[in-house]
Image 1 (cartoon, rainbow, N blue to C red):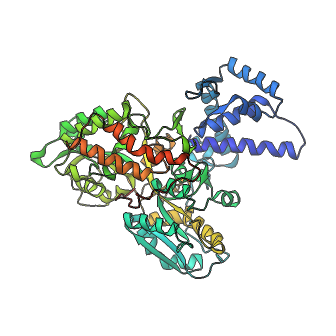
Image 2: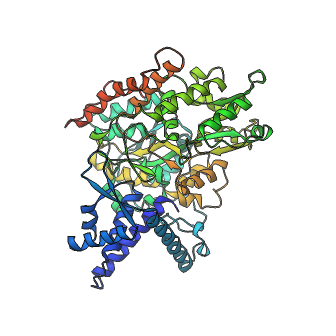
Image 3: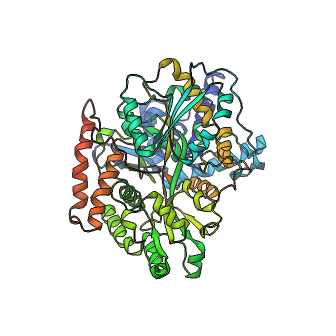
Length: 580
């Protein structure tokens, strides 16, 4: 079961208890049950809870709650953990025993609900709890809105020149009919889009109703107050957060508030040629060491075959690679608080500091330096486009690649990689959990939009991310699939090989946003990391202090987050090219 399914069940348990209390008038609160729900909700949100807060969630007197916490401790359901930064602060965490018990409980509950409502004949895997459509069914096409958007003039969208958005623009006439309003697009390349988003945020009135944002931009836009938060709209909306891939949804959140809705999310995978690996008797790599050994084994420059293609160009390409590969060594690029198997993305921004000068950073640098030996000759300037082309044309046996870009070779009849590609999460170090960093695009509404247009813009945005529209986009060439309801549609499931891979990774919790979290200065961090690491690998600067040097360059930016009025990132108006 996915993390979001667990959270959906916890919400279901809380909300179905309330009618019993309010309507029947029966006070059926059990302190241990209430505290278990509160504790598990925090755990699956990668957040901690103190003894005092846990006791308060019980609904009982404090002394009674503390006695029940002692019972839970004695029975091995929970354990104490001291905060590393404030030892006097004690958190309560669920033990493996409680987590296993709750997981089994959820499976039983899900099967029973499936049996009672006829959803998939009680099979646990036949539907996703909380999804827009609980059982597998064929989703119909988009339909016309029954009520007007209530907006004068055209609906104006600022978007990226990327496949999913290009598909959207080809449907302009149909969309105008469905939404009952003319539609205008401004579609720009990455750097131009970023500059336009920033300039629009500083204008008195937004020139756009809906804008597309790369996830690393979200933190900056949120801290500058440039985005309208969707919290109130979501409380009244039919849009269902639990239908989205968990990491995709989290990519639109900053400090516990939703500023973006997923539209074209993607995950970085390790691709490998199954035919080449089979010919060399190689197993799919599961660790960075396996990647190096496999790259060396298949590397045959005289035959035009290289071990692996990856982003190594100076600046953001190399910076993105370093930060995301560092996650395979178990560490995010900032000092996020670890909680269970994940990291707390809601920690106060003023506490954030760069965190690269550590064992994970050193191991990542060593790995990339060794990887260069088995890379194409143009690796020094290789970016997203070049690495994808190397793999598509058969000159690289492996490739780090975004999931939404795999269509380039899977739909190419001439590509040797078509139908001969294995898809893997990032190989991990020291038996750590294998994950794939999540990236991609969200849709947001500028905070400086004319207030009279805000409600109509939100209704249009909801329609754009609906299961019906998502399926329609896929059928017309979009490579982005991120809704459980669409995944269950038999007409969509097998349209691209990567779709089933992404579904499996989502269910195993392998799609994660913490490797490249939506925090302020993320774009600056990737650029600075990419400059320094590139110069070290190609001998243009000293390796000895490079990680400390990176942290020093970034610290001044992060220290502004402690001020009452955080400084704008004035020197970072260029986004630097990226496709995720």
